[in-house]
Amino acid sequence: MVKASELDEFLHAEHVEDGDIIEIIGKARRVSAEESVFERTYVEIAVKLPNGQIKTWTPNKTTIRELAKVYGDDMDKWINKKVMLEITKQRVRSEMKNVIYGKPYVSVEVKQEQLQETSQ
Image 1 (cartoon, rainbow, N blue to C red):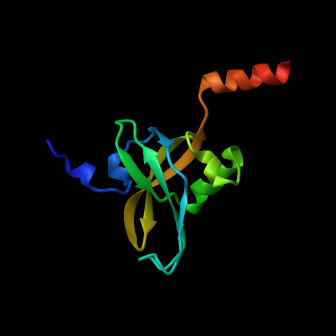
Image 2: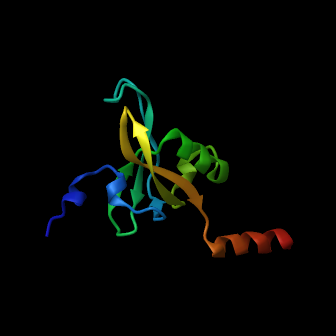
Image 3: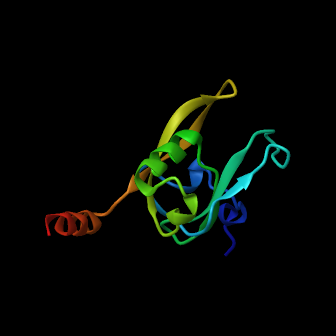
């Protein structure tokens, strides 16, 4: 069976649900304004969805700033990091659309390991 959602290589809000956790699986690629159909620079990142599908995500600047606070400024080091998604309705070019925001996701196990390391 072929699913229409599998044919779209880019991640859109209809591919995920609020609260889903995705994993960054590839290095970020900067797309220049000259290359862009939007005539502005943006970043593309390969991600794996909870259902195993691989999509290209173009995170917004707010999300990039939030991820950089925890995962660091070097986006190459974000590979294998997890992101919790938040779907929000927002006005985009005078139209209300679902927009994806992401926040760093650190599991309880990782937090416990970090606490143990700092207490030693």
